[in-house]
Image (tube, rainbow, N blue to C red; front, side, top):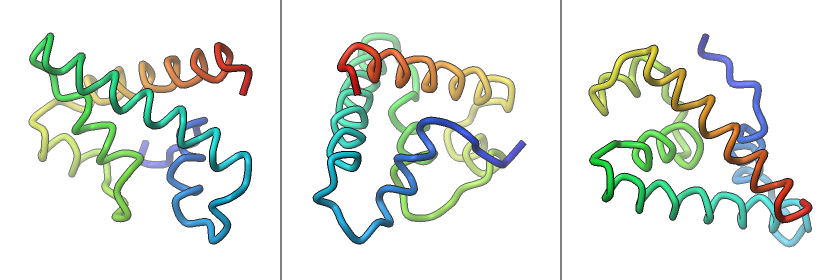
Length: 100
């Protein structure tokens, strides 16, 4: 369950690349900034913790297990799995919308 094979896993990997001037890196950063801003606004409006979960999953240098994320933000594993599916779906929609 802790292995993340996803579109958004590219985000985590791209943060470690040496060449930040590639087109792929720039496109991923656009998607990440859109998602990050969306979840911040969504959290304000609905009282959720999506932005914090998204940050822990994909934007930090440290790799957190699902258990650690659940304990940190006080959510259950099933909720985390639903959140991840939502993030994936939104990322794919953004990629398609922006023709990336």
